[in-house]
Amino acid sequence: MKTLQFLIDNICADFTVNSLLGLVMACLARGPSTMSDITQTIMQKDRSLDARCAEGLATGAVQALSESGAVNVVGSLVYATGPAAGPL
Amino acid sequence: MWNQFRTDEYEGMLAETVSVTGYNGDLIHTYFSRPLGKGPFPGIILVAHLPGWDEFYRETSRRFAQHGYLAICPDIYCRLGHGLPEEIAALARSAGGVSDASVVGDCRGAMKYLRTLPYCNGKVGIIGTCSGGRHSFLVACRLAGLDAAVDCWGGRVVAPKEELTAAQPIAPIDYTKDLSCPLLGIFGNDDQSPSPEQVNRLEEEIKRHGKSYRFYRYDGAGHGFWYYHTDRYRPQQAMDAWQKVFQFFGEHLKR
Image 1 (cartoon, each protein chain N blue to C red):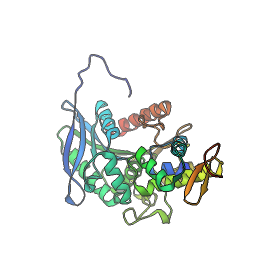
Image 2 (image 1 turned 60 degrees about the horizontal axis):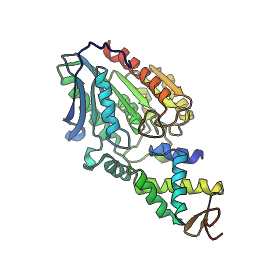
Image 3 (image 1 turned 60 degrees about the vertical axis):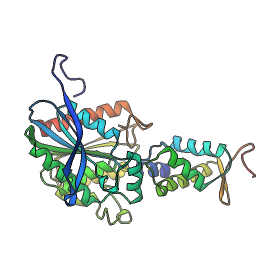
Image 4 (image 1 turned 120 degrees about the vertical axis):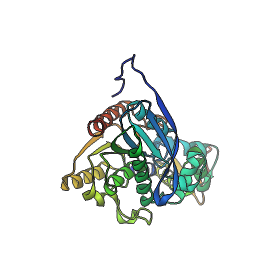
């Protein structure tokens, strides 16, 4: 989480750690997503971000969620864990 | 200071876009706010953060004007084009940020402009938040003639070699010996850029060079805790820090 906090603070993105993770989980609640989908979702929320910054946040958020067991990454897709969340 | 005005006092303000000559002789936009009246008033340069030359900085400029300062906020992103602040900020991020040289040049132009005004008392300070905090510290080191500087949670003032770029080739901390005016630092202890360790490192360097400074570190606050338009806002810490800023600028610019 400290790394994700650093990523957010370092670029002054308009997120807290919780709001970023919540945004990613909301994206995944609509179905499995690619990193590109998540990046786009982040860019739509904070339009001051460019693709590189948003991709960094997406990667950091998915990693944090993966470590907590909230998501699984299978190939190019990210799934929320839990009932009817994915194929695993 | 906050809420310290008489209710029968005359008050007026003008805020508008003004063009000044910036870095490389370029004409750049600034947002300029000033109290009405003959003054003389001290000046403050506001350096916008990376979310852009935005509404927060316009409102902050007017806050300083409300408190008796000529507040000028140069559009340091002017050369990237024009559009919504967030669109230009995205372009700036994509370009790796604006160059340190251009920010110093734009602030030099803003300082010169302030000093030409007949209602300026000749004293000029600088303040910035986030990347603007970094720039504020940098400009206070690179530009002679400033009377006070405020660095609000400037990230990457302390930067390892791998974070340096052609546009930002030297970590501002390495210019500390050239810091030319008193410095106020405002930081949140939950911030990770700058981290508390980096703030300590900067303080050590400032002490080593015998510079005049005051640092305030706030518990329960992280990066951007003045930003009332975001979830980062921490009202108690923010208002206390604002008091510190007004006190600091009052001591160095109004006397």
